[in-house]
Image (tube, rainbow, N blue to C red):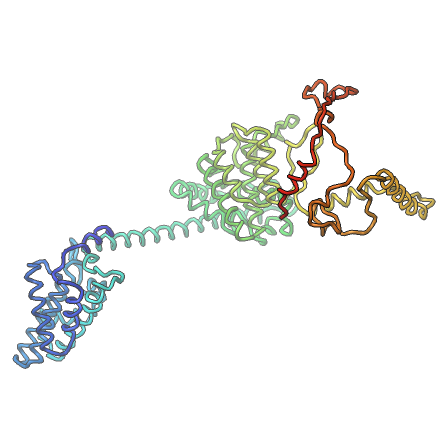
Length: 576
């Protein structure tokens, strides 16, 4: 469509330049008959250049302006003017709406309404064509309204560069018919979707009502674990839901994941005897047993590999949406349902010591029993794309159950990064190793805590019987240490600093009072050492590992640095 419109805009025009176009437009809409006549002559010249392919809007404007010129000159009587105006108005409505007509005829009022033509102008055209001729007053009024419409919709847009300047190219009848048909199809599709959504909600609400009837029918002394058998109505209802899932399982899962269904309200949890105040452990969410049994008949009936894939995909999409919109209650149950589906498919846990009765009861509480080949890479990406407090737990389940597992080191690093990102503790079977690993430091606070802990352990313990003697003894040891260091540095250009100096205010390698001149670093007395006098470590691993073996040394004549070398280095130094 756009390409077609652009091609229609690029064509040869009959006017010389923009100045001629502006002059004709100005003269046409002036009230001077002489100027209007000149504009009509120019349009006649354009017609000669255009032949029969001139713009329809230009022809209609010329016809209506010619009526106004003859009216103002007083050369015709009233009846003649009515006929003249009537022909121009009928011609305008027919020519402008002709391009809007498709293969099937449509009412002129609708077509004119699409082009913003006043409805009373169409009625005036109808009266001129089929009924009694209107008065001259109404003809003049219609002519003025149509000229205003032409000026706004055509003349002012042709060279103005505004949107929709080529209105004639947009009025293609077949394209308009296709647009109208597409709009009708979209409206019908939306209505069908809304109707299907309403039916899905009604079916699920009916299922909940039947389940609540079964719960209310239980005696008070009977355990909730022994869920009653479904009523006959429930069997029929499950069949209806299954039939609906075959037609639109995507919509059914969307409704299932709404609040009040698989994400329960507080009232629903209280009705089922679940504790609504706490949601267990958010890091490793598990569904309340009674709530799981409430939905088991429906989920077992819908169980299929396609349904499981789709519901896992929808669950992770919901978790991703909840990262932007915090809702702890909803996030817990969405994560718990995800964990429940993954655990049903897991073959990691083996129950060697359970009896057949226990195994039968355990299998009865699962959504599906037979293992399903899931799309592991897709699940892994979806899980990492929806970070929350339960992501490490869900990631652990996916990594444990993959058909072609990742390398052990990759899984360990992935789980560690996930726990760092979500700020949760890592509980992984991978970390079990004979050599215990230190807990990595994640934040600055944990670094401070570790530093304080090391200081507490490295601080010397006081004697319980003589607490006063411990502090002076520490000060005495510190003074003795400083005296030993000062004695060792006696005769050298270095000395021990005993002043309280804030060393953080001085850059590394600089001392208080030091000059900017590098010559201050030179000492008067110094000794030299050759390269060969320095001990050289052998590269052999055997020699390095053998205790008591000293490294050989080499000696040679000649100093490593001479005074001239030091002078050259000094002259080439640049201080920042």
